[in-house]
Length: 348
Picture 1 (cartoon, helix red, strand yellow):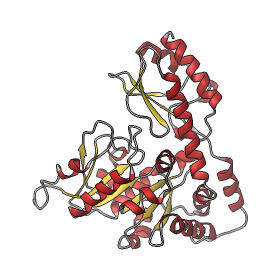
Picture 2 (spheres, rainbow, N blue to C red):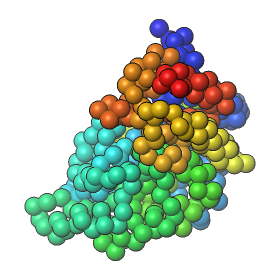
Picture 3 (cartoon, rainbow, N blue to C red):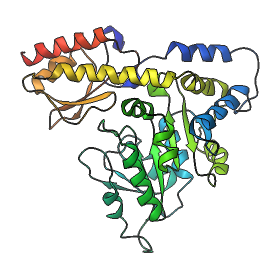
Picture 4 (cartoon, rainbow, N blue to C red):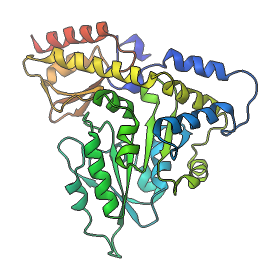
């Protein structure tokens, strides 16, 4: 049975949204005639120029197919066989990528419990006792997500402090930017402010959650690392033969601020949803909603009633916490209809 025959709207994930019309138009425009394969086309060259324009002249961008692949390629640039990654306990690489980093890269993830999904410098330094010890994995990379998995954003100063701590300890900083656009829109800054300017070494730039079909990018800001990406991208099964269709999507997002408009709208719909929850009995916000995700605690009978009409999931069932997400194509009317049903479910 098709999901859209059951649910009027999914609030489970921005991955459930469709493709932005401008992105589809860009793919259609690329679908004329022949073009060299594996990134030797003019669309990929154009996307790579845009990366330099947005993130600086030393930035190198590489189109890939999905977020897990982007993380694997990015992390693989910085890790050896006996190395480790320090990351939050809630990090996507630790919880939702089926152990890809540990299985495919053969490295250990050193996870740190956090209240809000964000690492602080003291979290990093608290995990450095094994440096130089031959019988323990060696911390080489700090990895954080922007937006973090609990819906919170790192400020530029927070990222700069993490980068400084990592670099002072001989490590590098990796950023999972699946929702980097949402963070920049929330913080009202450009993408460079959250990456190049704060000392990030390698990051992913997410497109799929922001209106693309299947398009992510690995962006390398440390010039000493970029030469290895073409080989590791191929080895990691992330080199598309018809790369022009991936690059065209990313170029569309980077053209005329489409990435920002999509992300800002998704954020605004979550803000509208959160505002409508105020004062409802038994309903509370578990974490600040600083992007396009709201983590909400509500009575379990209300959750069951809502899940009969809307697609969303528990984040922590014992705590009664669910995650509601909006996307570039979520409408105010859909949010308001959802709020009406929430009020009914909690007896407001």
